[in-house]
Image (cartoon, rainbow, N blue to C red):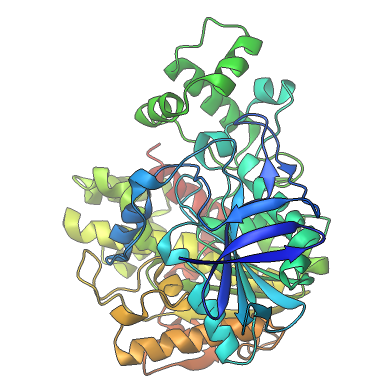
Length: 529
């Protein structure tokens, strides 16, 4: 491994992993933590700082890349998990990829910055995963004559990222730690990215799945955090903030599962902060206790509903300061829900049919069953129900948010339709995360020539967007255009289901009975209630 020392009076001396055309600063700490639930404190650097940034920093959770490879239906060589450290208090780090030339000289000053927030349902994931390496995307930006810096962010997940309650808050701990971590990373970049030749006023935040949901949360900020945003297969209509009643119920279940019910409130909080991390996570996972973003009056100021998204009353201050947004989906994002529903596959056809028949008007349930060809055998129904979830949780929300954001910002919509050709459960379908496979360039050797051309085209579109240029024709006015991405058949068309290979039934049902009603009916069944 080659290294190079990069010095700047505002940050000191950072030793980077060096290649001929890039410097990678890995595991750069952006915040410190007093304990696993403490608020992030922005890490300060100065001229006297010395940092070894040649290796990835600690992850929140160990492993996880192989789990995602199963979803992708392909894998990449990666680090040995046994050599990867974890830490609940030193996990707030990021990876910075900077293009250079000659002897490490910058290719330009004040480069635009591409910041990536990974997905994983707020439970799994890491910026350290090989599929999230930004080096190829950065190299392509240089090749295109529009260089940029790439940054990927680690943040708290699961219980340490999102467990909260009145008791925890009374002890001085705020809700939504994982989102606060991300916001702190963005503030750190505003303060220090200039020292890596980046432009702090020209940051584009890109998120996929839960990462895209995160970007949507940050659009609530009154303080400008970035200039542009890209939401890939996720909005807060997918994973909106839960109300206080839900966080209290989760906290009570956690206390019970950990056998802390006989302790005082102060003792419970102390135990939560100090008990062994593996014991904490393992016990709660076994008990089925999971934490999620919650309404906190700040990062998540209020509940997100279809009504307040569609009528424009959702308090998104980012509409005033975010200049442009790219938003899109994969044709079968619902494939990700096979993880949630797999254990319910036996009897799922009857379960879904009975629930929808009971909860929806008869003519609506009949329309639903006919459109998705239900009921069917359990195996067939399983896939059809994933399609229902796809349309209601992924596709339609991108339309709703595109309509909302285009009232004040320039919006660009994409529909990713290239099928996953790798052997696996959903071979031949455009599975969740497949657009990211193409964007980040890390699987190009595993793609056909046509697919690789599509990957480069999509990446170049996004690179132009990060550089402040138009990636394709915008979604505006009566046209409301979208770019359809499919190898050998890329086109810009009106964003209508028939033209983008999507289903219109979700709109037909929801517009008749109400979006929030339809979402609540499906969620009740989906969550097993």
